[in-house]
Image (tube, rainbow, N blue to C red; front, side, top):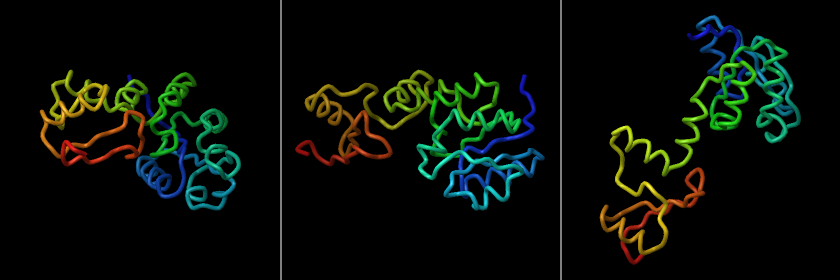
Length: 179
């Protein structure tokens, strides 16, 4: 059974937070903003029903501190956290910490984040579900010979992606076998 959300803490800043505030306002849900010292006078802080300081300007000392955000949720009585995007939005441990604290995480469950956070696991899940997808390997490639074999089966051009690259880092278009 789903419970009704009465107050949302927005664990983000700027335009992202403003959009969540507007959406909450439309459905009659109270909002709690959080801010770093650099964002003290920001519009999202002024527009929210309540606002709480997280800490100094660096995100690592404020917006990325899940334990501080959950402490503010407890103090403010927020029964849900909306992470926006970036920051903690794809952090499975934070989603689990919210659940453990009895706070609804507005986003995908931690299990989905773990599967979809890995390109190979996401491809395997898509195959298991019978979903269509772009052709390619569903496992990491061991060496250049294996990469050449897979590329030959797909046809050029191919996109080669480093297993640990993030945000597009480590991706290379390969237009011919010699490359």
